[in-house]
Image (cartoon, rainbow, N blue to C red):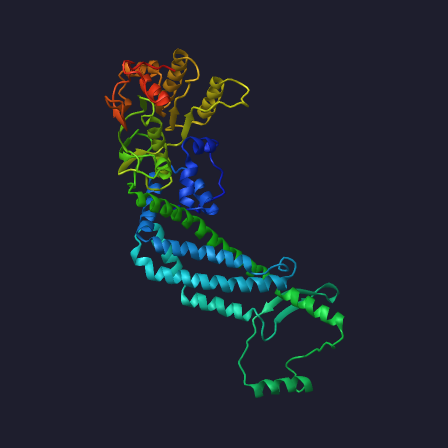
Length: 511
């Protein structure tokens, strides 16, 4: 996920994460990426809502994702391997490992044996598939697996695990401390020279008869419970450090599989989303992320991916040509696709800035250092103040966290009061944002607001209008046009009452 650090799925999100999720309907996107998996849902949510502001890092992820799209089975196999390794680790008993070094040692050995099986399978995938991957991230990952998990290393680990089972007994050393108590217990590696059974029998006889003076043997009587406890204490002292070290090694490898699962989980989520969109024939592309300092925005066939995921049919895409524009004012007929277009811009920006593909045939934009939404809210019976107060408080919170080169999406904001007052409030807010270098996309029915900015002939402003044909049909496309002082009240009338008198003219509807 990053060139120089690990992805943190528990990282804190921006304070407006909940508002972004609600306004852009991001839960629909996360559910599609997770395919019903709660873990993948969490990874997708954190990745999308923690935007990257460095174009190089975005492209680093894009190259990895391109490899994933080309080799989906290999990526899913590695993800499944990591999930399996973690599930098998949880099934290894460990009720006494927290209290006794013996239990810790035994559990760690069993877990490491399982992990070594998984690591060998992972190494096999790396050796077989590495030539087909071209991204820096995957090539570095496969090279690390091949070099650090070579046959010599695997053999050494398996040898150590076999020795730690102490099938031929345990060899350790100690020193005498105060009061002749044992201190500095150290587990020693026994030579374990293989001998034939006659040689082993001869050695045992020499120890019993005392003919071999190179070692001393002390035998505990069968009913000497105190002696057995003392021997058990000696064994515990000898293996305590080794058990702790082995448990730490187990935790390190578990952390590796956990991180592999997490980071591959993001790309598996992208694969899940791609499968759904390709099944519908919806286009996707890798966007071109540009530096934050210059306002750039252009795209072809850009659509609202969340709307597409909720519909059986394909959705209408839009052309975007807003290079050099800080203000994009969007007006036009009701139900003409204005809010959908606004959401498509926000979704594309977020998806681009987490390294994903975007729902379009072509897309490029400058990265932003903060994306905020200010959408109208439904009436809330629990509100202690009016809707306008609530809108102003949300706007104040947005301004407080805005930084340079941010984006704010407005959807029918400040329409809860009369048009004159709402337009003046919005006008002053938008001007302040523009002066601070913030990009503003504003959907509004307030003609006074939209046309007031249009009359200023600002070079950095663009005015789009939801297209409506002469017979009243909507194309759901946005075209560059001057704002009009009508929202086509006849269309509203016909939608509510199914048919309107033929003589009824289109009427201007002002909020």
